[in-house]
Image (cartoon, rainbow, N blue to C red; front, side, top):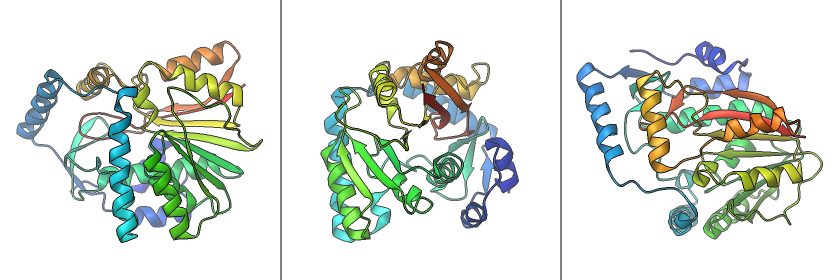
Length: 304
């Protein structure tokens, strides 16, 4: 049975694994099978039929949906104090996921979430060490912040989200874990709060949340340009790194368009770079995704 190997991940993501990363990697089940021709055809038909459906579009109108979603996680965690109840419910709903422009059938039902966790670990080690403050916008349940905390033990971690249930959950986490440097604030991508200030040594990260703004991400980027954190990291569904001549990438882009996901972020940052207003540090696909999309491309940049 094929298996994702550490040296393969190092090559694809262009990094050298730390001992801590290698240890965590070794504990994750990353074996999988490729889909048979019959199952691949069925997967293609599933995507095409889904694209014909009236799918929910992203946008400000979905605020109550996220309020309810994070509220469910908050209620469960408050009752159980089990960290697994912080994981968003949308993970692992469809067993097949994407790896290197193919659908695969993982041995583990949590492989997508585990691979995203490895990506967060990689980004934290490579880019976020040494900052006094790290702000995750659109943080949801705070599950990424908990993962970052393992490596950023002395950093002030700030979780910002438009749903007040997110703040309730993160404050409950901070209290339960005795983490005095874990903070929560309300923030709406569609109406950026300019009263939020960054320290002189701050970084910003978004993980599959700025996608919800569709074409309306520019207000948030303008906010970042004014506030000027030292570094900005996006792990988001972006069409720019994908290959339209590849069938799965093409279907991924079509799904982005149908749901009206993030449109033109990398292109916009590159235009800012050409105008001398930003510097792109890294822009790459990570080769991991869910059933419908290759949704975890990486863009790292600095406002100038």
